[in-house]
Image (cartoon, rainbow, N blue to C red; front, side):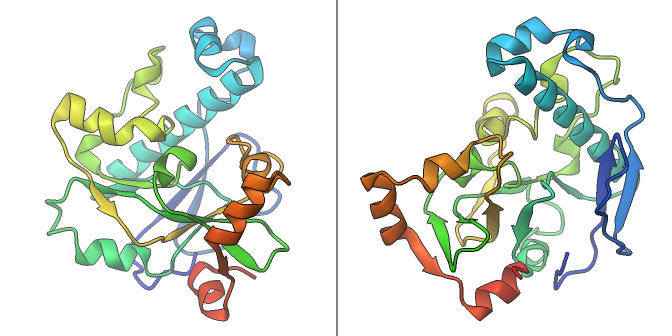
Length: 236
């Protein structure tokens, strides 16, 4: 949560109050008022099953999408100009918000997406550079002007009403296609994607396997986890 720019707020949406929580003046915990739905309770489960391939993924995606949308609703109600979805296990550069604030053109910029980023596996002494298309790998990669984030009636059963941040690989093209909006790229890597057993993208197997290709990739893209980088991203 360490940021050089302090005018931000984090809404943490939960169904069951988390055991590990952060006491921070800019973090607010909010119980999701519409509850958790099992697979059989999701009204468009068959449609989503085709998209996400398994019942487990349908439940996870549906729950996450609706919580992100509700968090966006709260942020808009409090008057924030820009919104961002951030997974709890992702790490932002401490300079991130300050950089955006300096380049927002007083709210005229429609938003940004991260072109590059890092991957970090706890216990290693290096970061893996993701040199392009970070937005397809990770969901904490977009910041959007608030008016571009529609808030539906939460009785809606239309996936598109909730999926703007969840379908993160499509955000850039979606805004261009439907609204003729061009998001601005952030070319410097300012996000760390932390590897663990429950990553939806299965990044651990994809990036840290023992194949020759993976070993070469780590050699070419590995960046030493220096003290400066630890301080920038809050890696302990």
